[in-house]
Image 1 (tube, helix red, strand yellow):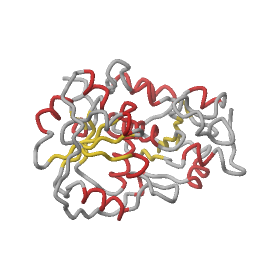
Image 2: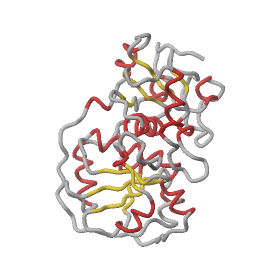
Image 3: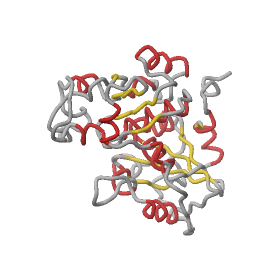
Image 4: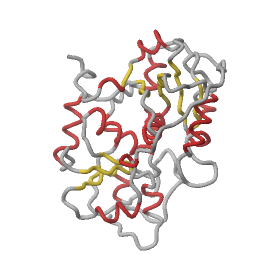
Length: 285
């Protein structure tokens, strides 16, 4: 059995060869999700892939929030996506932002969505075809289903979870962010909170430990399980993931939910940007 087939839900992943064979299928829409499209999508992308700009398309343009249900419907409609279209997501930073989009889409009840294992990194390493051509598709009318609130958690709920034995928080940032030694990740040195540290009791399991450095693909189920279980992050508990703004924690949410099969995992997308800037919230260093 391949390492992919050992995952709890291998059906949510596709590999680069599958995408190469199916990216032109009428019922498939490949979408690149980038933090920096000018340095990635614009330089070259999978032929036929549309761009979902993480900042402009997956987030609300005014409020600090994810896009609304109506904004998602408009995004999908303009990309020619129907309820029967299979959406294949991939992107930069080892699928940080593609996983965030995956979480957002699942929050809005989108069923037909998969992640390209290894993302943009693996596609380029294998020298598979890229293009600068920006595709257009006939507009469709997409309608999202009801919101799945079980996938998301807010600050007041996190506060109530502190010290509860049946709940566990996972801080997926790097060790120096977790300890409070630095206030922002190296990739975004100016984007930081007022205070450093972590939410009391949170376990530090950096998201990057779940992927292979060489090609960005996910590690085996056995390797991933060995990261979480020894720290008390087990399937019988409600797991809350967080990072700085919710994108890296979406990646870990994906790993816990679909690769390990944990039944109760929620993403705190307010994350440290909210917690570390809020008056009166408890902090550990």
